[in-house]
Image (tube, rainbow, N blue to C red):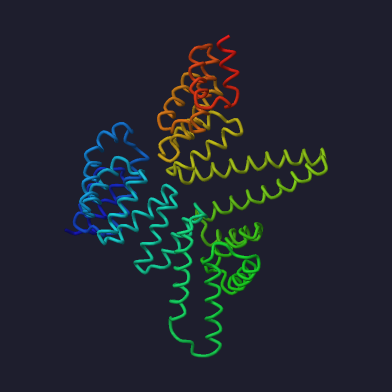
Length: 450
């Protein structure tokens, strides 16, 4: 089998939204070469894209997935790693965002010795679903593959999501220490000057590999990078590191100046454009915080007016920023959700509805989008449409969660506004049953019954 041609055909099929064909091709490649990391990653991406455009209804996924779940149970009982991986892959065609099965797939691939495939599974799921656990396992696999750079990247990504992950922090320290040791062994210094330069570089590497730096270390690292930037301002890596450090130190204007210089070199970079927007919002937030302190301290009417004006200006800028992002990257469904939130916040309900109708296709944002859509329809007095969104959202929520109570309250309020007292009591009663102190449900039930 010509594996490379199959992978190429699969990639082209994904671009054309021929997901079923692409998934079949990837499965063929992996049946022949289970540790083909590129094909395993391609399959994960194809399944994620398919879930965005045409998600499998939950009830159908559960029903159709039963034979594969049975295969998973049997493979685990028999400790057959390859069979377990195949069963997991079949189930994930139906439910690609299922965390337990993705992690189980990665574990099965590790047990079968297919480390490249395992790393692809863990890392993709970590990025797609923001899973600290997946990133930690990806870091561990990369470490076993002796890819210290990738291991460190994954571990730091996971620690950003869950800074309290002690195991990830321990592994990160081991990887950083080993990376420094390897770097120190690369060649021998030809002179005492070379040796001193090597030692300084090792110290810099140790500082940059730590997530948490002291103020003194941060100041020194900025000074080192500023010197490198002055020497070679065209080095994209130095520019980006300097931007990160300036931002971490709260020196947003300096960071912005480097971003703008970088954009002149990379005018089409979405990452840099987004970073510029984030830095400008950070400047707004800093100035708003200062004004809030003034208002609280002095009760100054002029400062209060300035605060309201600045908060309005920030909202307008942030809305423009997300409109730009959606305009440039309309297939990123999460951006549509963020845009919808900001449109709703400034009272542009019709625009918010359109945005949430896009983001509802994103499995990660489906429930939030349904609830937001329901609220928008309430704002427009379209109670039947609002009720439909809220009741659909309820089906995917855990019972007794705060979000469920919020949705039940909205449904009760819709029924109350529509004059359907009995239905309103029923919705409020579901909250009353588990949390009598939630908002004013007890009072509402008494009023509706009287």
